[in-house]
Image (cartoon, rainbow, N blue to C red; front, top):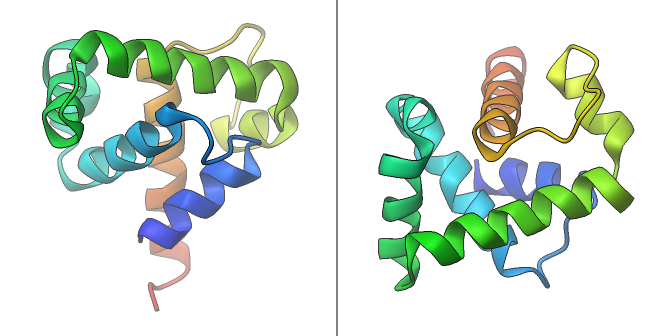
Length: 115
């Protein structure tokens, strides 16, 4: 599963040189395990990621905003729009970004069994 997550993140133009890359990957994994994280990104997801990486929720939030901006400004915006299944006219907030990526990975896992 982690390989699919990392492949998707890299396909969106986000490289592992960003701290937010690891946070995004781990955050998607958490959301796949428990969708409640999508309902409370700031209060549940960020603190859990921060705890795992021994940092603060503020740092997690900032670094995730950075990778979303990288994706939107100079990454693969076309792919993001395709997997969102709707037009995106503005850069999505973190909660929506997690939702789009988590739903896509989940749908791909259903249509193609995990190896």
